[in-house]
Image (cartoon, rainbow, N blue to C red; front, side, top):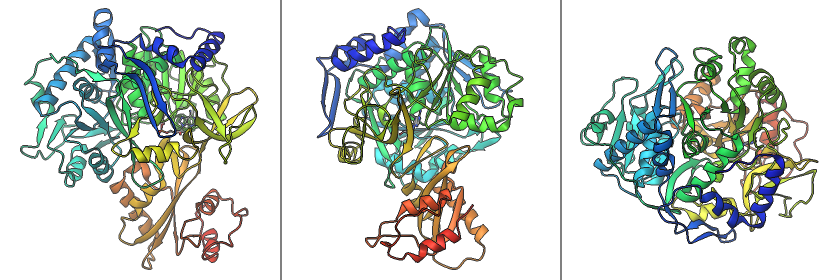
Amino acid sequence: MKKIKSIEDYHKEYKKSIEQPETFWSEIAENFIWKKKWDSVLKWDFNNYNVNWFLNGKLNITENCLDRHLSSKGNQPAIIWEPNDPKEKALTLTYKELHEKVCSFANVLKNNGCKKGDRICIYMPMVPELAIAVLACARIGAIHSVVFGGFSFNSLADRIHDADCNLVITSDGAYRGAKDIPLKSVVDEALKTCPTVKKVIVLRRTNSKVEMQNGRDVWWNDEIKKVNADCPAETMDAEDMLFILYTSGSTGKPKGVVHTCGGYMVYTGYTFKNVFQYNDGEIYWCTADVGWITGHSYLVYGPLLNGATTLMFEGIPTWPDAGRFWEVIDKHKVNIFYTAPTAIRSLEAMGLDFVKPHKLNSLRVLGTVGEPINAEAWNWYNENIGKNNCPIVDTWWQTETGGIMISPIAGITKTKPGFATLPLPGVQPVLLDESGKELQGNNVDGRLCMKFPWPGIIRTTYKNHERCKEVYFSTFKGYYFTGDGCRRDEDGYYRITGRVDDVIKVSGHLLGTAEIENAINEHADIVESAVVGFPHDIKGWGIYAYVICDRKRDDVEELKKEIIGTVNKFMGPIAKPDKIQIVTGLPKTRSGKIMRRILRKVAEGDVNNLGDTSTLLDPAVVEEIVKGAVK
Ligand code: PRX
């Protein structure tokens, strides 16, 4: 696949992608292996949402990730795995080895009753077997639904239910810094309410004690001994589902975002190569967990589609100390490093002593993803990690977009701190005002929408196409609505200003306020709660919860601890509130709607500017809330 070589080349490619999108994308798709070529490139309708790319094309994404590299790169590392504990040995899997392991595990899946179209839930630590499990599903045409290991049993059960999974792949436990997290017991708890699951495959990782249920649970290591490594890749239609990945929305129930085989492959393959300007032989490291879309697209699929070497890290940035990322970069001579602003901010806060001992001279490109990066963190990253010598790609995209949409091309697009800069070829962003009018020209602020499909676009929300239409295609007729606010500056550069809906980005993780409220309300004494975000120095946004307790509790601190425990238990530690305020009422309109605008202002400490409160059912509650606000 050819790469964009200069800014002129970018503009030329961009123009072509807008004027002749079908020619543009079919030329890119030609770089992949298809079992049968597509009949037509694109069919689309944003009004009654339906998008198809590469119609009637047949392929298997794993042949593109693995088989086709065997002759030229069979002995090149595909995955370098760095364990949580620096004292444990790192592991390298060549393309040949990875291919063998994927095919073997695909046969294990078949032996355990899996077939094309089945949904398989993967709940695992960041070990090579996680990538192997994902690819093995794709090999046999089963649809993977990876659930982040930081979610607890309730969130896991919701996701297993929604996708009707019949098999779960997990491990005994997971190492995360100094902690040993018991994954299998979370699965056991979740499965009490998931009758569709007939089999659980358990990988041994921490050697912790687990309960194995007879007839249902089998060990990965036992099963793998029963198979060989011969597993032809299933033929998939371009529009067959590749995976479901759940993302939070404005309502309590997460949405099962569906991506399909052909378009997702073309889009992640193309964007990986171009955004990072990947050169053969380079070591690329994306720190995201495979439980999130970044891990799917830019740790597993994008790099492997390009025959790259992708580094997978099991641990956390601050253990054994805050120099761990930098140590790994030197150890494995990482050339491209892709991480989240929240990680950068937390490491910046730990001070330069953790950076200084490391050379970092293998680095060529740096990237960020997941949330806006403030200029200070961008500059710190640029100076101390990139040594003013590595272009930074601030990549804007979403679970629903499948791949990067707005981003500099490394070393080619002039960067500006805090700006995702320009749309990639094929991406047609527009800014709309509240009435849905397109804002023309530069120096404008609006709601970020897309007016034309790209191959990686969400196809549906699993089993609920109406929800997909409603969430993404009904706010502004004829457009895909991202949910983000955005500015286009005087240079035509895009800067994402943040969410405009009821979801919060906490440490780069998208969390629905309703989902957190549901978890809080599981506490026996809580009758109602309202969650909003507030600006947080490290996490970007923190979680502020207003809760109504149905009996007088004098032990407020204890109550707060219990609430945090409840959220941990039902949703997971990522959703833990930073501030909790006990209130006797919430500001509601006469129709019963919570006025979140007021709650947000109080959480932000901006109490002199609450706007009109006269339409509230009980304006007095606002006073009480302001008085009791948690600083
Ligand atoms: O608000 C934007 C923010 O993350 C949201 C998408 O979250 P998720 O689906 O979890 O995917 C994250 C990883 C792709 C967006 O709607 N976001 C993502 N990247 C950026 C960003 N905000 C600002 N700058 C970015 N580079």
